[in-house]
Image (cartoon, rainbow, N blue to C red; front, side, top):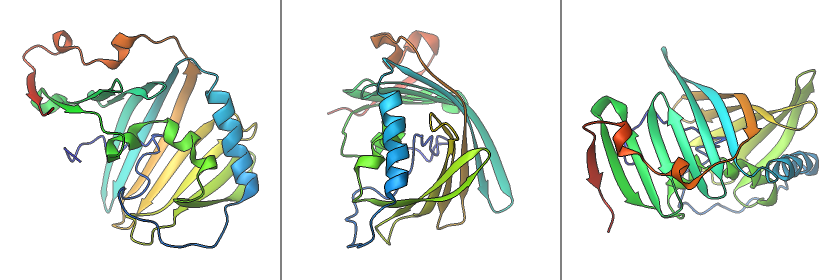
Length: 222
């Protein structure tokens, strides 16, 4: 990625961070759990009715004895998204992507390429997983008073992600948390504080320089 950003992920649901993109999954004969697929498709049906989506979250990253906490929000409409993570920003209007780092007051401007890993910041990634059984194997691994646990494992054995665990509420109407286990020992826990339908405008998906006086703009577009 262009920064080792403390955006580490908002994966989102941003489901972030699923596997190392660009790698070819190796053959895998197992089929995903049909009951898990039903839950994912139900969630997708619910969220697809939203004109625009607003999600507020907290993200805890654990690596050894180090622990970092992030707070943020996501706005999503179609392929457009706005991610705010501890005042750092990732904004995509479908043509251009802006990466803003508050500590250096710098923004990088890039052409949007849906084939690059930037798209992992899209909340819609998780909502489409129930229709994609090629990259991930997933199954319900638990059920309690809080809801269901669904675990995802990449079919690519070389993926940096060992597994992900999603919690879905008992009514199967929302994702309550996502936990990502990386092979280097990093653990990321993404907790959804709220998620709702909102009305959004094009200006929600454009970086506003006037809101960041003195910002250095690094334009990397071709």
